[in-house]
Length: 296
Image 1 (tube, one colour):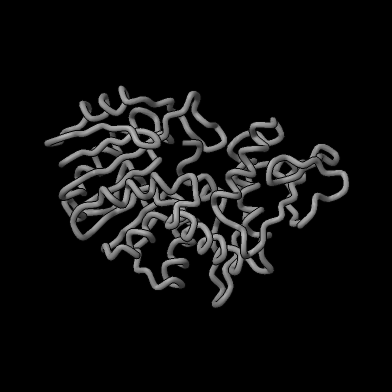
Image 2 (tube, rainbow, N blue to C red):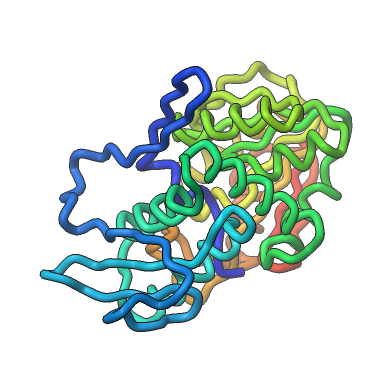
């Protein structure tokens, strides 16, 4: 599995101005001249080189990326596939450039940011539900493992899984460390009429009471943490969950720096994690990556 986690939210702040939602890159610590410039073009512009779904060139040291996506075609999967091709070709490097380019592609896919994000959500959810996305098997397995009537998605990012669980009829909560990602999810939840109680929260110090949710999921989250953070996140999930904790992680030859991954993981790591926290039962299995199911 080549992707995971929320690799856009760290640079976003969402400003709700009545009927308009604007997403802006506001990380002042990042030199703006290093960030890619994004434009939309149905054809490969003159002077650009084609690379997978995207095309690119450098002008005075600044990377310019052109994409063909509009409201009909923009989705999580095409953005990731396109940018990973640039990473593999050595054109794009690092998490900062990857996230900046991703947000830029999404925002320029429609006439307004609100329309762009709406199309991005609608198309991404549809691809995940119908199986067209490469990440769909992970979502499908995660949804099948939810037990009880309520679920909390920790590290929810855009909240595609949380929204899918709401479609399935569960009482859904979600938290993410990124205020921008939480705002996007809240906007999508209201627009789609799918109740999701989204809040800003750290996986290592969850803002929820003990035994307050039936199932707690951490899907492609723990590979972003160090060993201390992993143990704290699992302990917190077990504290909050009444019935089950569901963990999924990617198995990679090397951690993907553009996704912010820190750990190269295997089944052995999942067994070690289980032995490091208190619980009444653990199961480890492989299905498009590794899974750890804990019973509080």
